[in-house]
Image (cartoon, rainbow over all chains, first blue to last red; front, side, top):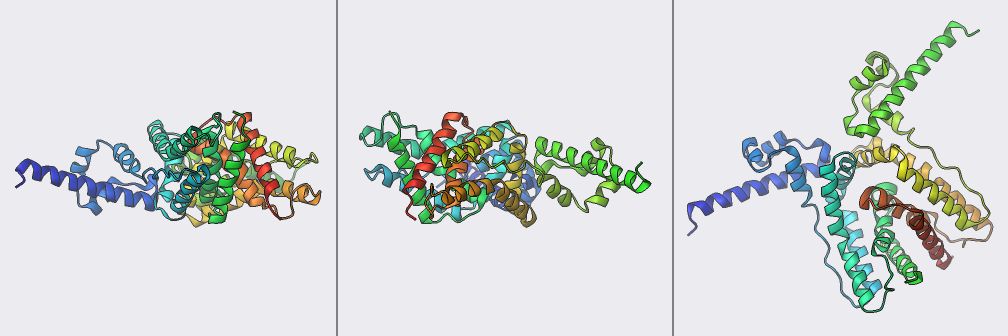
Length: 195
Length: 195
C-alpha cells in the first residue's frame, strides 16, 4: 500500500503532467508568443500557485514544455550507409508532414533570435535531433564505406536542409521521391569528398 | 515651384516612409510579436491617427513593412550554369551572415503557421527571392547545359535549404567553403538527373 508521501508524489506528478500537456497543446495552437499561464491554469485545472511552485516563471515552464517536443529518432543500422540515411530522412519527412511540434518549432526559432535562454534550449534540441546522422556516418566510416574525412555536419545540412526548407519556407510537398533524391544526392556528394 | 497639392503629397510620402522605417527597425529588434503602433507613432513622430489613415490595421502596416524586406537578387548571367548558381548562393550566404531581415524572417515564418494573410505574404516574398534560381536554370537549359528535365524547385531546395538550415537551425558558420560545396553538389546531382 502506498504511504501518504507517495500519494502526494503521485498527485504532484499528475498535476505537473497536466500542466505540461496543456502548455504543449497551447503551444501547438498559438506558438510561444500566445502562451498564457492563466489559460494553462484554467484548462489544466491546476492552480496558478501550484504552477508557479513547480516553474518559477513563464520562461521556465516554456523551456520545460519545449524541451519535450519530439524525441530523437531511432538510429537505423542496416549495414548500408545510404539505407541508414534514407531511413532517417524518411522518418524526419514523416514528422515534418504530420507532427504537431512542426507548427511550434518556428516560434522557438524566432524567439531564439533574441532570447539567449531559448537559443540554448533550441541548440540542445537541435543537437539531439541531428545526432543520429552523425552516428550513422561514424558507423559507415568504421565499415570503410564512407571516407574518413566525411563531414557529418555537411552531410546533415545536405539532407535536413532541403527537408526543413520545404516544410517551413517553400511549403512544397515532401514526398518520397523528393526525400530519396535529396538523400541520394548527399551520398553521391560524400563519395566525391577527398579524405 | 511645387503647388500646394504636391507639397501635401510630399509630406504624406515622408510620413509614410518614416512610419515604415520605424516599423522595420522595431521588427528587427522584436520580431512581429513585439510590434507596437504606439511605439511606432512615438518614435517616428507620426500621429496614430495618421498611421491608421494609411494602414487601417496593425496587420496592414505589418504586411506592408514585411513585404519590403530585402529585394530579389540580381540574376547573374556568366554563361556558365555553375558560376551563375555560385553567384546566387554567395549573394544569399552574404545576406544570411549580415542582413537585418534575417532576424525578422523567423517571426514571419512563425506567424505564417497560423495567419493566412501572413502566409500569403511570406509565400509571395519567398517566390520573389527564389525566382533568380529558376531563371538561371532556364537559361542553362536553353544553352543545352542543363538537362531539359531539370527541376528548378529541387535544385533550389538543394542549394537554399542547407544555407537556411545553417542560419536559423544549426547556427553553424556559412563560410565560402560550405557555400561552394553545397553548390557543386547540387550541380553534380542535376547532371545525373534523367530528362
